[in-house]
Image (cartoon, rainbow, N blue to C red; front, side):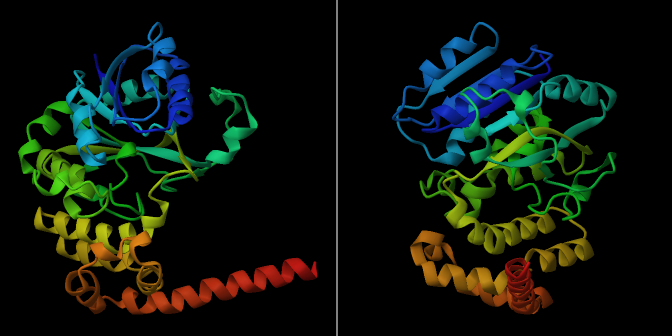
Length: 337
């Protein structure tokens, strides 16, 4: 089998139901579905059972909550296909996604890693329809994660550009990769740090997949595919309050790690500066909100003072004022109209 769709899940039965329904509507059903439930309070298996007739499903329920990172590793360990595609339990696939992905892989047999574009959609849109949601009702004008239109084969580190993806592979759900490369490099993970239960609490349990990707695919050919094959839903994700920490702490840390593994120096400096475009306003937001936004995870020496050498760290204040001014004028013009 060519593709294993791996879904880590926790306490979101309705979202998982929509996700599974989108998988059952695929025009090509020759793929494996691996689901690992991180000890949900809900009976997740009850949601899954009706789809076993149509989908090749493997299911695991952890006896205790392992934390998000270890549940990702668990669901990946269940896969047996040549390629793995992680899917969020609140994500959807377009009906031809598997068929198109297989074609892309077969045409580019020298590529071990594929970046597959995705669309954004507010989860409230789905509430207008009956469960499970049918993907034929998806809107036609959804925003794309990447606006880049140039499909191309490239080296792995050439993917580390904000023109391709502003999160620099932090969002694992757009990555399709060879299972063999992943499995051979699991020893790069720090087993103590990854066990910390607080999601996003350290680089290891946030960016473990980036460490594995670097070791496995840094010398491999990759492919950027601009056509979205999935829909990434937003609005209900538990970590939305922690996003400022992710952008100004974890993403710069990821760029530091890429540099340590061979990312071009000038590319690193350019992207590191770009990643700090919201630095001061997000930093102050974290200070004001405290633990809710993860202030306890900030090391002031490494995460604040070291970043002050980059122009965007300072210019972020100006960017913030400009954005707020534009928004204010837009509101005034709207009221006048």
